[in-house]
Image 1 (cartoon, rainbow, N blue to C red):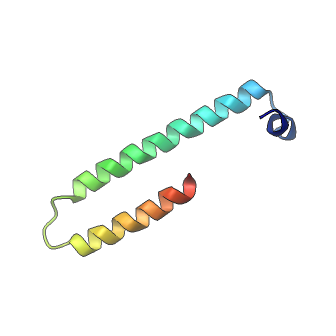
Image 2 (cartoon, rainbow, N blue to C red; image 1 turned 45 degrees about the vertical axis):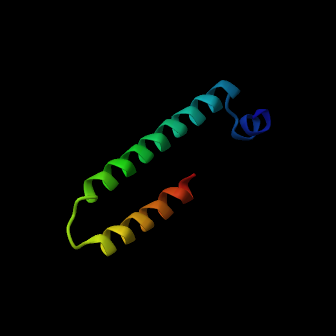
Length: 65
């Protein structure tokens, strides 16, 4: 942490604050994904499309982690 804070030329406490904000945003994204999955769970005759959408969204979200 100290090296990164020095490299970014910010206080270590600010680096921790940034990390916490990013963690919280990612958690919101996971909650959003769960909500979207729940919203699409009851669609008739669209399971292949929904499955592909879930897979694609999961890949996008996974790359952000």
